[in-house]
Amino acid sequence: MKIYTKTGDKGETSLIGGTRVKKSHLRIEAYGTVDELNAFIGVVRDQEVNQNRAALFSEIQDRLFTIGSTLATDPDKNVKMQTPDLHDTDIQFLEVQMDALEQNLPELRNFILPGGHPAVSFCHVARTVCRRAERTAIALSEESEVSDLVIKYLNRLSDFLFMLGRANSFELGVKEITWKPRV
Image (cartoon, rainbow, N blue to C red):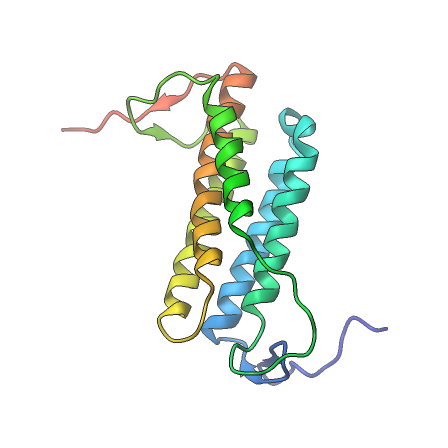
């Protein structure tokens, strides 16, 4: 099978269900941003400080593929192909992970600036891409069907990535940089 099909050469692509849409369509933007997020999660996963979290990242990346396939499916078509779905337990899984990370961290009393170490910075980049994916999914939900679980999962995942950045700082012995507003 060849990777190129030439069917998108005129700026259109197919959703699951066969509907052709412009590549600029909000649905394409939504699952494209989730794909970008998944790539950044791979960068976060590959940081040495996160080597003991491989199973966690596999779970997250699998859920992001699930979200991508959900967003890539035309909600107005009766699709015969079975696609994976999200569950409330997927969101609870992230909450449990955040609670476990937070147990070892000092209380947060100020806003912190992203950075201090590449592993921390990559968490914050992934977090901001996740927030964009969430905003795009919300915008899509205003004109078409989007599962509430997709939006909840992306919201929780961005919180998780923030906590992971803090945990990476702590585990690496990197001081968090607090924001001191100029007044």
